[in-house]
Image 1 (cartoon, rainbow, N blue to C red):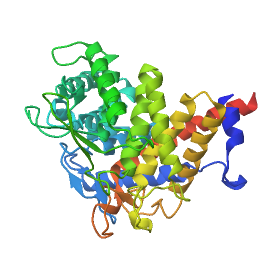
Image 2 (image 1 turned 120 degrees about the vertical axis):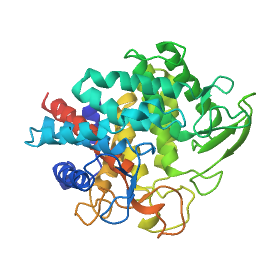
Image 3 (image 1 turned 135 degrees about the vertical axis):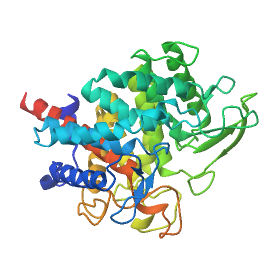
Image 4 (image 1 turned 45 degrees about the horizontal axis):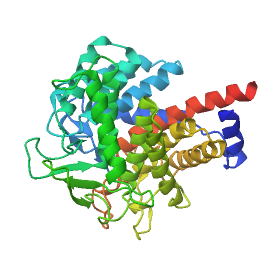
Length: 407
């Protein structure tokens, strides 16, 4: 019934009902392979690019897991479609994943989830290579060391020993999957059990529901807490327009992160939180379905958009459409996801040609008023990652739509 409902829900013109995924994947194959040709040693990872050359960062950077993650998604697509170069792409994915192996011991920040789960996590899920499993589990254990019992949350930034301030950001919702997945695959918390990983993830998510959401469904970016008492010191932004504005990608982290929590726990409060964040996001979208870098921005023009936020939202909304039970909500979330994906896979957002390093134009790291800044109007490797993920999720939904339509 879900997919019959969605089949009737489409608002795109008839000739555009089915997105053409093949050219986008072909462009991804060219661009991802081109980076490897220039950086064959797998020691520097792509982060952002305004032209045809990626800026690079070391394996310890928070974005390092996205390039191998892109390769794993491309491998999945090619393998499922019987592409002759599927195994070559797998070999690249394995090489670039291996370059992140030492990051499993990272305890200096919360981004180990992005680093390890997007690389080794996808690698294990697609190959079941058992050598990847202890690395993922060690990463989960490392992340658990940043949990602060008094606040009930994982510390995002700063040293574990800081007793004056704990800083936690909405992005941390994306790293909880590492804990939940590891708990089902033999992982454990430091000096604890697999159930402690679940407890940490739930505690963190519950605090985000209580402390991050505003009455209108938007979320704060940063909350500073007293690690000794749990008292909130300040709610603020680090990447948005101002402390009370809604940074667009932060809003999508909430949609996605709470959808993940519901996927693993089936606890209704997490689905409700994902919907709450999604409804604010959808209600404030512009006509082209790609948000500005901050929803309170008054800046106009493509240079102030954030295609990476749109990519995260698309992937999350496709999944959300399958998690809710109400037919109208299914239709709502799927239709917005499909229309956003249509925008992202066509100009001006899709950079199909080789004069641009990334797949998506017009991404933004931060709200920024200077279009020449590297913080805005740029390709972002994580934008490409979530675009590929969204395309795979969409293709899977399309297959189910076809099967439902033939029954």
